[in-house]
Every structure is written in structure tokens, then in C-alpha cells.
Image (tube, rainbow, N blue to C red; front, side, top):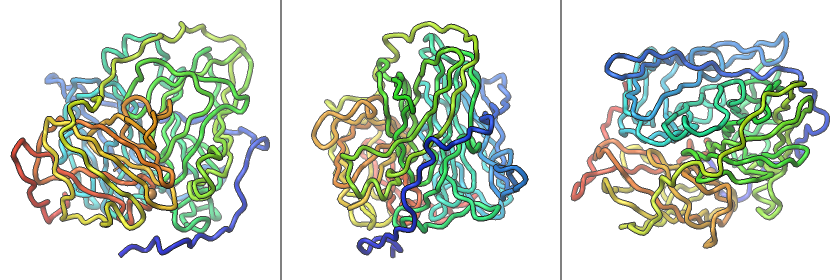
Amino acid sequence: ALAIGGGVSLVYVNAAVSTVGSTQFSNELAIPPLAPSRLRPDGTREFELEMRSGRTEFRPGQATETWGFNGAYLGPTLRARRGEQVAVTVRNQLPEASTVHWHGMHLPAAMDGGPHQMVRAGATWTPRWTVDQPAATLWYHPHPHGATEEHVRRGLAGMFLLDDEVSESLPLPRNYGVDDLPVIVQDVKFRGAELDSSHAIFRDVGFLGDQTMVNGTLTPYRTVGDELVRLRLLNASTARTYTFGFADQRQFSFIATDGGLLEHPIALDRLQLSPGERAEIVVRVRAGERTVLRSNKLDAGLGFWTQRFAGGDDTFDVLELRAADTLRSAPELPAALALPSTPDGSDAVQERRLKINLAGINGKPMAMDRIDLTVTRGTTETWIVHNNDGMPHNFHIHDVQFRVLTRNDGPPPAELTGPKDTVFLPPDATVKLVLRFDGPADPKVPYMYHCHLLWHEDQGMMGQFVVVEPGGAAGTPPRDHGH
Ligand code: C2O
Ligand code: CU
């Protein structure tokens, strides 16, 4: 049974949050270190991740209990190249079981790190797979069924960057931590020295914080020495949706989305990201100036409920860029980036309809031992996902990158072009997605699809699909979900 739903039960405690104008950007932005890796002669790139608890000083003199990978909060940035085999040793030193899911990665279901690949306290899990997808900004985070919001909110998240021939040959900013910055945006709230986890503001949406931080840094600024700066934006918040832009309304170039580079840069001045989504943007700065990345209120057109439930009525000054007095010049952005990598739907063999709301997906809350959909390896499908609820959700599918064909029967907005794995669904919205399952098949181990508002996921807005060989049937997921 679900603990949520049951009509409108929100509680307005606070007025909208706004830090705009008053923000003193007092902390230099932390850049998550690149994870060290060993490249073995057989081409395997090996990483080590340890999930730990620790203490983090977000504010001077106040130690806060947090969780992190290889450190006390967040995790290092993993980086691998298309064609490499990746092997990760994941050690769980937490007091409870968890998982590590590679969000956006195309990989065998048994390596996916979903709720069927639990790693017990004290145990080790060693997934390996071959990177076979375009360059992209992916991320990793826990996925234990029923506790994902809590594990991510405590600090377990990190970026996973993929490179390929295309990304390496284009004249784009690519100097990690210099002109190519990871920007992991989370909202937080403190109660005394500790992180507050209450759902007090809008009960049905999950946790919403009252301030943002980037890469674990509160009120961050970053000094940049290049005239073009690439920001890899990741909304790693558990429930909050942002609409990013600059306080001075400057335009930026949107170059990549969840699953990698667009066909060409798109000039925008605002871009919406719901939880789990990524966008890479390139912004031009002038010598000596400062500019603030700001999350504005969501577009009024999305309606009152979206504003309230997605935390979209709030405005945050997210990150200040401080340009040095002299800047290295950068080449113009290329007019063409990458060829399309998602199918256009012309060869779709199956159309499915999924209705999502707080009762679950197509009326059913998630069940670990029920396979909801069986798809055939090597085929293309169309999924029509409809939010028939009064509150915003989003929709994330494991293993694949999809193309958004339409939103509400019209062409998708610019920010939904390119390869996506997560898409925002305001109340009553419908998206038509086209996706191709390239395998490998495993009839017994399911992939997930779910709302990435993590408390909704925890409450059961999630379903499971397996990929089978042509003519094959789904098996039964193993009863023992642990490692
Ligand atoms: Cu980012 Cu199923 O998750
Ligand atoms: Cu939801």
C-alpha cells in the first residue's frame, strides 16, 4: 500500500524560497576529483568505489554527518572511453545494504546496480561491462528499493563521463575542472548541524531543501580563465526541478543532453532540468566580469501545481562564475556536433501506453518479483507515457537512451532534443518516446523504469522490464536480491 496519494494533502509551511540578490558567494566551488583508474593490458579500466559514512563541513565549524563514495560526501568523477571494458570494485562500508546504479549507461541488466543488485553492508560487488554508447555525462547513485531518496540525499552520487572519437575531435572546452566543470546541483536543508530529511513543505513531493549547493559547496563561486566555459549540469536533487539560466539573461549554447551531444548547438537563455536529467551548456564570459547561474521560477505556463509540487516557485542563485582579468581565447563552437544516435520510430514494432501517477504505473505499484514488460532484443518500440495525476513527475528508463518524438502531440521543446533517458512530465502531459533495445538479453534480470522524484520511486512509481531474445519469454527474477 502506498503512503502517499489520497487527494490533496499538502501543507504550506513556507513561502517560496528566494536567495536572489542577497547571496554572498563565499566558497570556492569544489571539483570532484577524477577517480584514479588502472588500465590493464587487456584494455580493462578498473575503478574502486567505497561507500562510506563520514562528516562534512559544509559550513565553517559545523560538522554534518554524511555519506559518500571514497570520501564523506558525493564521489569522484569516473571517466572512460567508448570501447573500453570497465570494471568497478564497489565496497559497501555503510551500516546498511545499498546499490550503485550507473544512470544512463547501456549495459547488461545484472551490472545495472538496480534494486536486484543489492550490496550488503560489508560486502563487495564487482560489475564489469564494455562501454558502447556515445560520449555523455552520466552519473551514478544508489537504487535500493524504498530507500533511494534517503541514500542519495545523504550524499551518495557522482558523475560518470564517457568520451568517444567524436567528443575528442570537436573543438569543445574539455579541460576537466578548468574550462569543463561538473555542476552537481542539489537542494539541502539543515536542522542544527545535521541535514534535514523531512518532507514538511509539500508532503507528496518528497524532500525539498531551502538552499542549493553545487558539488557539495554552499554559495559557490568559481574563477575561470577561459572565455568559453562548459558546464555539465546534473540535477542530483531528490525532488526539485530547476529552470537554469543566467541572472543577466545572457544566452548560452546547449550542446548535450542526458545521452550525449546534440546534432548542433542550440542557443537558449533558460533550460529546465528535472531530477536525474543532465545538460551540457557552454557560456561565454568577458574578462573581469561575474555572472550568476540562477534557477528561476518554472514557466508559469506549467501551472500552479507544478510550481508548488516541483518546488518550482523558488528561485536560487546556484553558482557565480568569476572571469579572470585576462582570459584564454577559445575557438568558436562547431556548427555540427554529433550524428543522431536514437531511432526515429519508423521501424517501431510495438506501441505501449504507460499511465503514471502516485498509485504506480498503469495502476500497479512496483513489485520486485513481477516483470511488467517484456521487450525483444534488437527491436524498436514506442512508449506513450501519460501523467494522469495532479502533480508533476518525470520518467526515467534504464539501459537505453530514447528520442522524445512529441510532447502533448506537438514537437518537443529544444531541451528535449537529443538522446534522453529521463523526461519531465508536468500534470496531464503526454510524451511519445522511441527507444531501441540492443541487448544483451537476460530474461531473468529486469531493468527499471520509474519516476525520478526519488520518494515517488521509493513509494512504488516504478516498473520492471526484461530484454529477451526473439521468441523468448521472461523468467522469474531471483528471490535472493543480494550480493
Ligand atoms: Cu537515476 Cu533508476 O535511476
Ligand atoms: Cu513522481
